[in-house]
Image 1 (cartoon, rainbow, N blue to C red):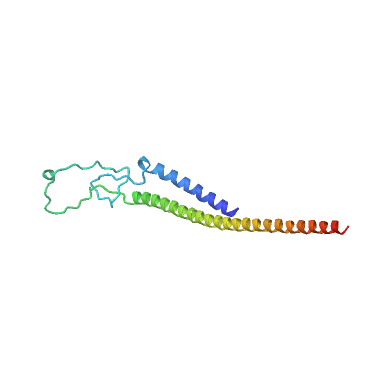
Image 2 (cartoon, rainbow, N blue to C red):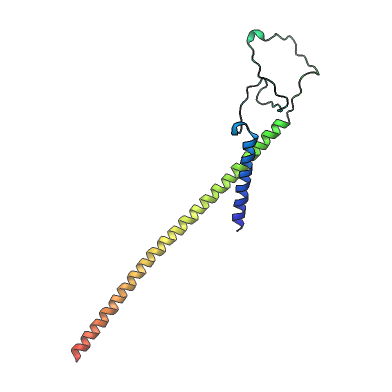
Length: 155
Protein backbone atom coordinates (compact mmCIF):
# COMPACT_ATOMS: atom_id res chain seq x y z
CA UNK A 1 0.00 0.00 0.00
CA UNK A 2 2.83 2.38 0.89
CA UNK A 3 4.68 1.51 -2.32
CA UNK A 4 1.56 2.23 -4.36
CA UNK A 5 1.12 5.62 -2.72
CA UNK A 6 4.78 6.47 -3.26
CA UNK A 7 4.58 5.43 -6.92
CA UNK A 8 1.38 7.44 -7.33
CA UNK A 9 3.02 10.49 -5.75
CA UNK A 10 6.06 10.16 -8.02
CA UNK A 11 3.94 9.76 -11.14
CA UNK A 12 1.79 12.75 -10.14
CA UNK A 13 4.88 14.86 -9.47
CA UNK A 14 6.34 13.80 -12.81
CA UNK A 15 3.13 14.67 -14.63
CA UNK A 16 2.89 18.08 -12.97
CA UNK A 17 6.56 18.78 -13.60
CA UNK A 18 6.16 17.79 -17.23
CA UNK A 19 3.16 20.06 -17.56
CA UNK A 20 5.17 22.91 -15.98
CA UNK A 21 8.09 22.32 -18.30
CA UNK A 22 5.79 22.21 -21.33
CA UNK A 23 4.13 25.53 -20.46
CA UNK A 24 7.36 27.23 -19.41
CA UNK A 25 9.27 26.54 -22.60
CA UNK A 26 8.71 27.64 -26.16
CA UNK A 27 7.38 25.06 -28.60
CA UNK A 28 7.51 22.39 -25.89
CA UNK A 29 11.30 22.44 -26.00
CA UNK A 30 13.29 22.64 -22.76
CA UNK A 31 15.74 25.09 -24.30
CA UNK A 32 15.48 27.04 -27.49
CA UNK A 33 18.64 28.85 -28.53
CA UNK A 34 18.21 32.52 -29.34
CA UNK A 35 20.85 34.33 -31.27
CA UNK A 36 21.51 37.39 -29.17
CA UNK A 37 24.18 40.01 -28.95
CA UNK A 38 24.92 38.79 -25.43
CA UNK A 39 26.83 35.52 -24.90
CA UNK A 40 24.71 32.54 -23.90
CA UNK A 41 26.15 32.53 -20.38
CA UNK A 42 24.49 35.87 -19.70
CA UNK A 43 20.73 35.91 -19.40
CA UNK A 44 18.12 38.56 -20.00
CA UNK A 45 14.61 38.91 -18.65
CA UNK A 46 11.62 38.70 -20.95
CA UNK A 47 10.85 42.40 -20.38
CA UNK A 48 14.31 43.56 -21.49
CA UNK A 49 14.73 41.55 -24.69
CA UNK A 50 16.81 43.17 -27.37
CA UNK A 51 16.54 42.54 -31.06
CA UNK A 52 19.38 40.49 -32.55
CA UNK A 53 22.16 42.71 -33.83
CA UNK A 54 22.91 42.31 -37.50
CA UNK A 55 26.15 43.93 -38.30
CA UNK A 56 28.97 43.68 -40.72
CA UNK A 57 32.58 44.48 -40.01
CA UNK A 58 32.39 47.83 -41.81
CA UNK A 59 29.59 49.03 -39.51
CA UNK A 60 31.44 48.37 -36.26
CA UNK A 61 33.04 51.59 -34.96
CA UNK A 62 36.54 51.45 -33.61
CA UNK A 63 36.71 51.97 -29.88
CA UNK A 64 39.86 53.45 -28.50
CA UNK A 65 39.01 53.14 -24.81
CA UNK A 66 36.44 51.29 -22.80
CA UNK A 67 33.85 53.66 -21.43
CA UNK A 68 31.57 52.98 -18.51
CA UNK A 69 28.40 54.93 -18.11
CA UNK A 70 25.39 54.84 -15.86
CA UNK A 71 23.03 54.83 -18.84
CA UNK A 72 23.85 51.29 -19.95
CA UNK A 73 20.96 48.84 -20.03
CA UNK A 74 20.68 46.86 -16.83
CA UNK A 75 20.33 43.15 -17.37
CA UNK A 76 18.50 41.17 -14.71
CA UNK A 77 20.70 38.11 -14.31
CA UNK A 78 18.74 36.56 -11.45
CA UNK A 79 15.36 35.94 -13.10
CA UNK A 80 16.48 33.88 -16.09
CA UNK A 81 19.00 31.73 -14.17
CA UNK A 82 16.35 31.13 -11.54
CA UNK A 83 13.93 30.06 -14.27
CA UNK A 84 16.63 27.87 -15.82
CA UNK A 85 17.40 26.54 -12.36
CA UNK A 86 13.72 25.71 -11.84
CA UNK A 87 13.58 23.94 -15.20
CA UNK A 88 16.80 22.10 -14.48
CA UNK A 89 15.52 21.21 -11.03
CA UNK A 90 12.29 19.89 -12.54
CA UNK A 91 14.27 17.90 -15.11
CA UNK A 92 16.48 16.50 -12.36
CA UNK A 93 13.40 15.52 -10.36
CA UNK A 94 11.94 13.82 -13.42
CA UNK A 95 15.22 12.02 -14.02
CA UNK A 96 15.32 10.92 -10.39
CA UNK A 97 11.73 9.70 -10.53
CA UNK A 98 12.44 7.88 -13.79
CA UNK A 99 15.52 6.21 -12.31
CA UNK A 100 13.53 5.13 -9.25
CA UNK A 101 10.74 3.73 -11.41
CA UNK A 102 13.24 1.91 -13.64
CA UNK A 103 14.94 0.45 -10.58
CA UNK A 104 11.53 -0.64 -9.33
CA UNK A 105 10.82 -2.20 -12.73
CA UNK A 106 14.10 -4.11 -12.59
CA UNK A 107 13.25 -5.26 -9.06
CA UNK A 108 9.78 -6.38 -10.17
CA UNK A 109 11.24 -8.22 -13.17
CA UNK A 110 13.73 -9.99 -10.90
CA UNK A 111 10.98 -10.94 -8.46
CA UNK A 112 8.82 -12.12 -11.36
CA UNK A 113 11.62 -14.28 -12.75
CA UNK A 114 12.22 -15.74 -9.28
CA UNK A 115 8.52 -16.54 -8.93
CA UNK A 116 8.46 -17.91 -12.49
CA UNK A 117 11.40 -20.19 -11.68
CA UNK A 118 9.69 -21.33 -8.49
CA UNK A 119 6.50 -21.93 -10.47
CA UNK A 120 8.35 -24.02 -13.05
CA UNK A 121 10.11 -25.98 -10.30
CA UNK A 122 6.84 -26.59 -8.46
CA UNK A 123 5.14 -27.53 -11.73
CA UNK A 124 7.91 -30.02 -12.46
CA UNK A 125 7.70 -31.43 -8.92
CA UNK A 126 3.92 -31.68 -9.27
CA UNK A 127 4.32 -33.55 -12.54
CA UNK A 128 6.79 -36.00 -10.95
CA UNK A 129 4.50 -36.58 -7.93
CA UNK A 130 1.54 -37.21 -10.22
CA UNK A 131 3.63 -39.79 -12.09
CA UNK A 132 4.68 -41.43 -8.81
CA UNK A 133 1.04 -41.56 -7.69
CA UNK A 134 -0.02 -43.17 -10.98
CA UNK A 135 2.82 -45.70 -10.80
CA UNK A 136 1.94 -46.55 -7.20
CA UNK A 137 -1.75 -46.92 -8.06
CA UNK A 138 -0.82 -49.22 -10.96
CA UNK A 139 1.28 -51.36 -8.59
CA UNK A 140 -1.61 -51.57 -6.12
CA UNK A 141 -4.03 -52.54 -8.92
CA UNK A 142 -1.57 -55.08 -10.18
CA UNK A 143 -1.19 -56.59 -6.69
CA UNK A 144 -4.96 -56.59 -6.22
CA UNK A 145 -5.48 -58.38 -9.54
CA UNK A 146 -2.76 -60.90 -8.65
CA UNK A 147 -4.42 -61.54 -5.27
CA UNK A 148 -7.78 -62.09 -6.99
CA UNK A 149 -6.25 -64.54 -9.46
CA UNK A 150 -4.65 -66.46 -6.61
CA UNK A 151 -7.95 -66.59 -4.70
CA UNK A 152 -9.75 -67.87 -7.81
CA UNK A 153 -7.13 -70.56 -8.29
CA UNK A 154 -7.46 -71.63 -4.66
CA UNK A 155 -11.18 -72.25 -4.96
